[in-house]
Length: 550
Image (cartoon, one colour):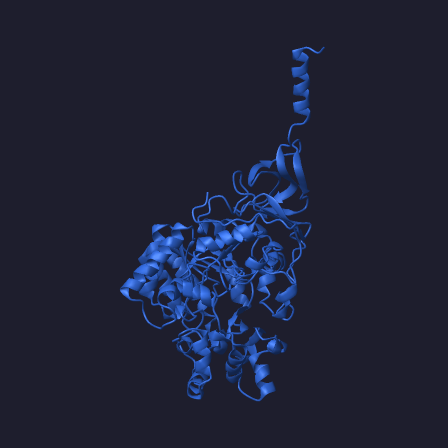
């Protein structure tokens, strides 16, 4: 019969022999780009649960899973400062277009947000999602998380959304009571974790908001140390005046501010970029926190509404379409579409008919037109480009997805080099399959971030790789006040991208946009691998990231 001491000793041996691994995951031998912009170094990364537990030499340590990153860059996951995946993620949580580029956090809210919604808004559908089952912005983010998403998500509350909630689509200022209710909606969203207030001022009904209204809403955001972020009232003829409005809102409300997708649209406006940069840097030198984001292309994408005056769009789409069918109103709209003005942002006039490409229709019967310009369609139909635009909106009963070629490559490179500029896709995140193939998105939906790393870092050497990683990670995380994301640092969430700088490449083009980027080897979100050897793993560890997360 064995003694008690013998049994205890045997138990200890068994316990030691069956001890658990030191880490859940070890990423070994990679070249660390930690997000600081400093030079990289060789090290291993140990992950426990959802966080980074160790960075250094782990050659003597064990793990449940080991990823060999020899010869690869290991970086924090990228932050997409403007994603339009709000609708896509409800249907397909993989976010394949972004995940395949290393994006681990998608930020929504350019004017429109998926909450707060009134019952009327829920019945008519929002900008991106029909028949929503949620009411508040937080409920929308929770819906994504519960449904399963591969990326993390965050959102600004939309100034357009709260305006529609209280004022509708009317071209008028809110009453005092309506403004108070709008401010209460912003406050509710901030309490729920919104990053701040987002506006998109070239579009109706956002266009109808004046500066004072925006300042009042931004003051609420300032109480929560949030950000005001804006698609400014002009990115072309009145770029400098629009920038001054943003700086004024920032100063008067006491809130930091960011310019959505910085650009100077239209060749006659390209020289204004130097003045815009100088004005931002002056404001920064005076203590204002002004930043910007951008995408890495010379064309933007929106709808044909950006080629028509805001007054004709008052009341919502149905009234807009009905007005276009009135011969007298149509004649007036045609004149305004062809006439230079500083009263509203006419992207079609800035790009010219040869630079306006239609890429998205609701009606199957019109999809054969995808990829053609207004100039080409006008010749085919024996009419004018402006008439074509109006006819397409009427025929498709939508704003019609449109690409506008507006920017200069020189300015794109100049902006990329600015230390206060981060990056955004301003696009959906989708898979190149199924219903997605019916229309052509802007190639930025598949290539914004890999294009930065391939063309502008590796090929054109506009900035170094370590600076590019800083601008994709730590810079936007700091701007959003996220204390545990954006860096390879012990205690931070394990959002990690692993790729080969020599082979990462975008493939999407304006003619054939549905092509995933390549060269991204592995992606982890909250410590879980969602991308392995260039293939999605089917994991959905993404979370709603809320303001003040720690």
